[in-house]
Image (tube, rainbow, N blue to C red; front, side, top):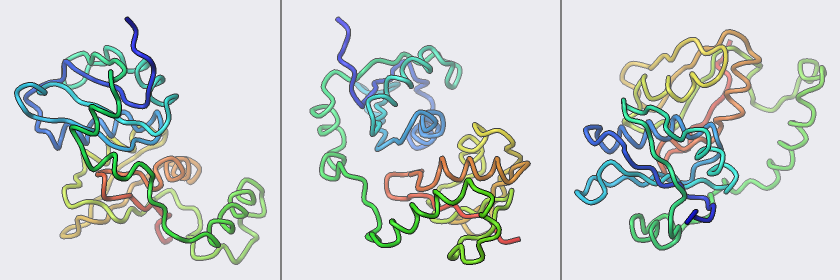
Length: 216
């Protein structure tokens, strides 16, 4: 009675003592390595305790996550993961807003998008540094500057997110500013890999993180 693969995975046997918001952030942090997550649904009702749904954009991401994280000890309990039985029904019921906006909203900048693509093609070549007009992008730096972070951002949350990348050193929060932070890596190459992978990552469904190189 294997369930058909779909974008949504169902996780149970989760530690019920963990607060809902912390649980969702931790699930984002460990599952984001498999692909873009559209949403995470975790309810603290009696019937739904210890369970969560992770909705990926691609079925491949969900399959990979299911295989890799099956039985993974999460808050001292091994996760049990399966494909969600009825993706649309269940998710729509639990989180009505998700179905209303299935598309990821991109900033309306078609012309810049075309430029960006050209830029990305140029990046791997050695002309990167000799090209003086790299728009407003800062030159590569092992320190990343994060903006548009949600109010509840904390050091542990960002560390869980970034320490999956090699060379991660530390997260530095800015006193009295919840919306910005710095993340340091050992080399510029390593910081760039994390920047590319997590650019636009949604820590919460409404906050897409913006990552640039810190000013030197």
